[in-house]
Image 1 (cartoon, rainbow, N blue to C red):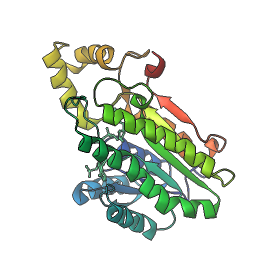
Image 2 (cartoon, rainbow, N blue to C red):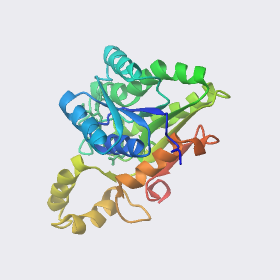
Image 3 (cartoon, protein in one colour):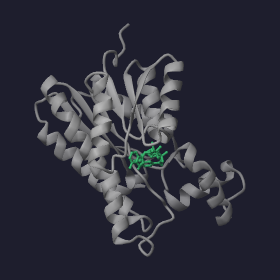
Image 4 (spheres, rainbow, N blue to C red):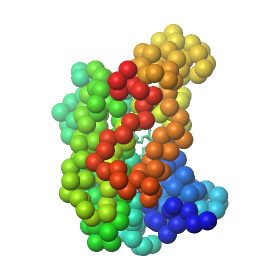
Length: 265
Ligand SMILES: NC(=O)c1ccc[n+]([C@@H]2O[C@H](COP(=O)([O-])OP(=O)(O)OC[C@H]3O[C@@H](n4cnc5c(N)ncnc54)[C@H](OP(=O)(O)O)[C@@H]3O)[C@@H](O)[C@H]2O)c1
């Protein structure tokens, strides 16, 4: 049976680690040709190789999406293997230890450039060809903090409001073209890079010693939700696969949430 993603090519930005890596792996496992992207060539190639070793099709694109030149290089590398049908704008940085008193005006501008304009750069370079071909999927990875900001990292929360907002504007722009544009706000999702940090934060706060002890206390303190735990990557990626595939053709301009109900909890 043909897969939903057979013949489709997907660029997942920031897929050299974390959520992006998992999205790229799962798209490849479903039959898409994926372009794995990051700034570190060795780390990015290692992810692509392991996708290929698992039987998938993967190439790499290297570049800093905080610059126009980096975005040009990433678009050129992605398009070298054929057209891009699915763009997942996942690149983003965050740091929950930052606050209003520690974030400078320059930090606000820098994070907007990395978290928002990086995605705009790729939209500008790849979406016109999707429109010409009459089919495409554009997905902004976002966070519940865009709708439910906290006192910490206000600049990061504001970038997530922008990511969700621009997905709707792009949908209006793409009306009737066969290209959809949506955002998926993540609640806390456990990624490999954050486990050690969260465990040491939990120990400092007296929330427990082991991850199992710390997790419920951490969720109650930082992101109360109806499920009572942090989300797992596969739970988030399922929504990305739905939006990236053919079954989501009537879903556009949407801000979906994978957050255990945190948004309204
Ligand atoms: N994990 C969560 O709980 C959570 C919740 C809500 C939303 N999100 C969003 O999900 C996305 C991924 O987060 P994550 O937790 O998976 O983070 P991560 O593991 O740190 O991955 C971030 C990725 O972005 C890339 N990147 C960062 N700055 C870049 C730049 N200037 N140019 C090109 N690539 C750059 C990194 O590549 P390098 O290898 O080059 O550093 C890496 O591949 C982010 O947009 C984040 O806001 C995450």
